[in-house]
Image 1: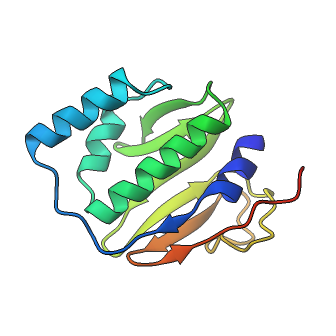
Image 2: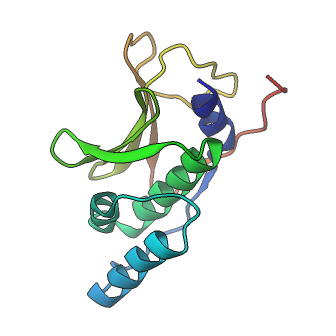
Image 3: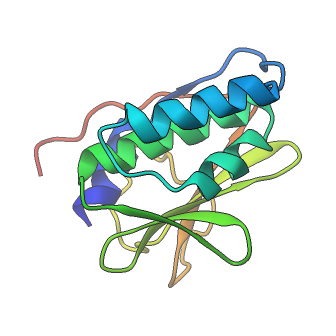
Length: 147
């Protein structure tokens, strides 16, 4: 649950416009950087998935990825449901899903507190809720009181 709370309190999206798609060389450099320079273990399949998304969604995915791993270094990345990136630690923590006009960040803890109201999909769902982010949308969250 700590990872969920950390993610919910730290997620800030301030996207202005989209970025052009990365070239094959940029993708290779980005993948190399994440595997070589990252403080956490990454899964190249998630890099590949992120590279298929529009630039603004790529930025959000990278931010979520960094936040999840900074909450707990033992978080594992994997692909489930054919191609969807999942972050796990003793079960699912969250998943990413790019759509045509938004990005879904699925939070797999249906009771995680959300005093700032950033979780905007799946209220009452017994399995997961989601944060749906659209291009040029800004989500600002203030830190929660110490837990």
